[in-house]
Image 1: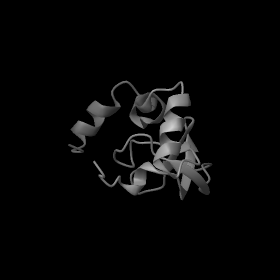
Image 2: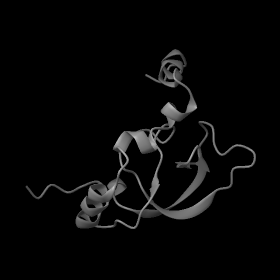
Image 3: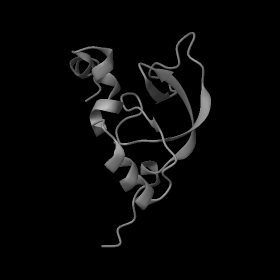
Length: 102
């Protein structure tokens, strides 16, 4: 259908820091914390969400075919690998609602 895909789905060099096994983007929302080092890495977002709750994964998939091959070979779910809230606490999403995130 020749629909252009957003560039965020493809791997890019990005400034990220590691927390709970995920690469997160630095921001006012809470990162990095003391001891977390920002570095530039070739990463991709497997699912698109807010940078405060979506992690990136190491990836060199810069084309649609490479993204498809990467997903086909992966044994992690899209959300299971990169949904930061799930790694913070069982009530993280409810906490966000109370804080006015939604």
